[in-house]
Amino acid sequence: MRLRHKPGAADQIKQYAHYVIPNPTEQKGKWKQVFEKEQPLHIEVGTGRGRFMVEMAKANPHINYIGIEKYTSVISDALDKLIEAEVPNLKLLNVDAQKLTDFFEDGEVDRVYLNFSDPWPKVRHEKRRLTYKTFLSMYQQILHADGEIHFKTDNQGLFEFSIMSMANFGMTIHFLSLDLHNSEFEGNIMTEYEEKFSSKGNRIYRVEAAYRK
Ligand SMILES: C[S@@+](CC[C@H](N)C(=O)[O-])C[C@H]1O[C@@H](n2cnc3c(N)ncnc32)[C@H](O)[C@@H]1O
Image 1 (cartoon, helix red, strand yellow):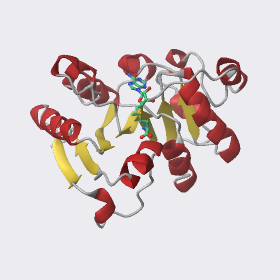
Image 2: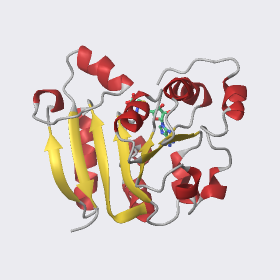
Image 3: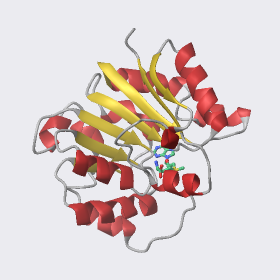
Image 4: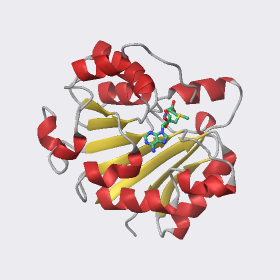
């Protein structure tokens, strides 16, 4: 993700505290009350500029969504989209996902989306990949027993690593596509990165995995 300084981003985030929730540790175990309706909760880790979350929230009003992004200048672009869309079922968190268990109670989340996560190609950086076993363990803790991870990327190396990591963790893979855009999968919502890389001709890989047997 190329970062640029966005003047006023931090102030804008403070101003829209009903969209970018400040002090998310205080909401741990209480996210249902933050939204207008009590309904399943899906989160995206590394939400970037937010198109996926905003379009998912518009298409699925029966689901509550939280997009998590560590960079203020980046999440500010997601906030711009949310302000325009005015959907009640999407909130944003400007936090580092390494602390997910500080923000969500055990079993509070129903699905985790990972889209075009940073690949960290050097082996010595593998612990930073969002599908490394420590992250899978965190997702398992905050996910409901029937919860799932839905992951897509154009990066073959990261995809292979992630499948191995999930399998070694004992997860069950129940959907896999090695070419999502030329598959029969319906209802795909493209992320910003997905549009950029697929327009260059890159294949998109997708997996859905669960912790239940
Ligand atoms: C390559 S971008 C993909 C953005 C978006 N999901 C998409 O597909 O267009 C990855 C994003 O994940 C964010 N990210 C990476 N590690 C993170 C972490 N530990 N916590 C929160 N955000 C993270 C980065 O800042 C970046 O915006």
